[in-house]
Length: 345
Ligand code: EPU
Image 1 (cartoon, protein in one colour):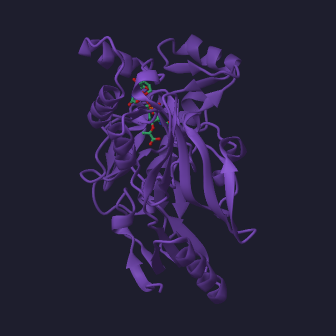
Image 2 (cartoon, helix red, strand yellow):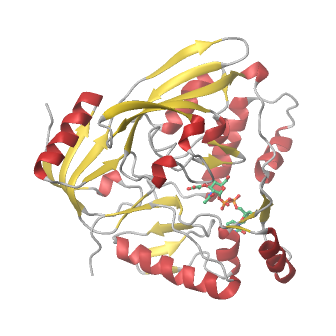
């Protein structure tokens, strides 16, 4: 039985803590409830917005129609051998709790993705990545409700069109509702650990340990994140607000001639990923504050809500930064969080 509510504040459902109303709201715990909620929206001609943890969301105004909070829970070990393991988790599980559960099982693979806010179901949408690892490296397959076909489909990782902060689910917005995700992990003893990312490599060396240990890597990642990224519960934010731009080798070369210290990461396809945080920081925005919004003092890629900000305040600051970066470096920064709601003048 669906518990439909009306004019519900979304403030506690988005990590930027923006206070906007959902016209109608329902939480779904099962696939059957999800189907009932989608049918109800179709009968009433309500647009549908799907919400996981709300950690990559920018509310630009009230949200018309039905907002569906995805709360499917459960996680299980499907297979385990001396060489590998397969786990499955439902979309509404908390991502970081899942990472800890796999580490408790002695399984490695997700440790670099520790402490990323949000839910399991949201992870494939933007192919979450941190400290040298992206979800696609562990993702085996997932089940999703395909709204175009009206049925549950299983997709292998290769079908999900993963790229940097991108996937099939971003390219076909609204079509798929991710229900559960399966990940291929490794028993700790045979795990290929990734400790090359410079700050992580430094922290690892400082431990003096010689044998890689996924639990220690997880703890180091948590320490690094806590030192640079604000806790949304204390200072509301949506993590990185812009994508890191990926440019041609020749454009990167031109910029490096002008800015030899510029952070840059050559990609497998020959292009070069630049650090938007470095560019914004060099442009002098770090720690900037304008009324209720600002740029985080430790990480220029993170915009924060100091209290009472609306989506338009955040977007105004974002567009000032985008214009400055365009003018200084000739680069376009793309906003990362999904923008939802009817923009208010
Ligand atoms: N930098 C600065 N000043 C800043 C911020 C960064 O000079 O204010 C420099 C750093 O010193 C470093 C480089 O820029 O040389 C990259 O910085 P960092 O390692 O902090 O990573 P990032 O590129 O800013 C990305 C992800 C993060 C992820 C980290 C670690 C994106 C958009 N963001 O940030 O993901 O945690 O790498 O892997 O790709 C998120 O998506 O919400 C997120 C936090």
